[in-house]
Structures are given as structure tokens and as C-alpha cells.
Length: 194
Image (tube, rainbow, N blue to C red; front, side):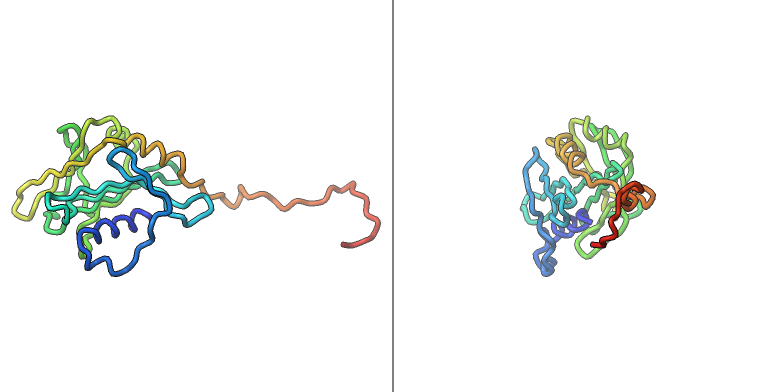
């Protein structure tokens, strides 16, 4: 949920006209290296938290890449990347770690401000990202021209560690819920009802 909100916020930052609707703002924000750690106060435990980074072009008004990661209750890592419109959907974006393509990133949908890559990352890939020196998201335009977009990993491991500390508790299954307490059978009763 928070990832979608941040994706919208980050894309809206690139296009002020799209910022008409006021998205939910984080209640906790802290810099972790080149990443922003933030929590949305939607629950008693501080709400869902995420780390995100946005990469802007030279004129600082166009967001080339917005990346958001969160740790789910089961420990899996959910990611949302937003890239500009005009990329080739036939040539899936790729994540490169230390100049080696780690995985293809299929676009899940495009909205008026950009295209989104959304999903749960494999644990091994999260570890590889955390251990890499640098990363790039490689996109191509419709003519096939390739554009590597740098993604800083400074603070990524620390940010992911923070997310793991504040991840939501797994939901209780109905069978795990405590049964109602009953009075012991040997309790004396004097007939007075309360």
C-alpha cells in the first residue's frame, strides 16, 4: 500500500499538475545514506514503512527513476520502481549489479506519469543488491536506444535492516487466536450473580 503511495508521490514530484490529489504523507522520515526511510502512521505500531530513492535528471525537475522497497509480514521484500513513459515495453527494463545484469524487470502497468515495475523480490536478489557496489536500472526507448539509470546503494543494507526491524507482525490465523477464558470448575459459587 505505501509503495503505491510513494510511487504516486514521486511521480507527482516530477509532474506538479499530477499532484492535485493530496497523498498520505509519512509520519516518520529519516535519511539512511542515499535512501529515505519513512513510516506511514496508519496503525498503532507506526504503520507500514519503506525505503525509497528518486533519481532526477540534470535539470532536477524530471524524475528518471523512483525506487521503493518494503518488508512484508512474512519477511519477503516488495518493490516498486517507477520509470518514465516512452520506454520500450518489448525490451523489459533490467537491473544491473556491478555491471552484470541480475534480472529483467517486467513492467506491470503504465499510468499517466510513468511505468511501474511492481512485485516481490527473491531473497537471493535482495542479498545481491545489498552486497553490490553499485546498481543501474537499464531501460530502452522505443527505437532501442539504451539508457542506464544509476541507483545508489549507499545505505541500502542499513535501510533494509531497519525495515526488517519494523515489519508488520504476521496476521493471526483463526486457529491461533486465544480461546475465551473460563472460570475454573472448582471455583466456589455463592449464588450471587454480578
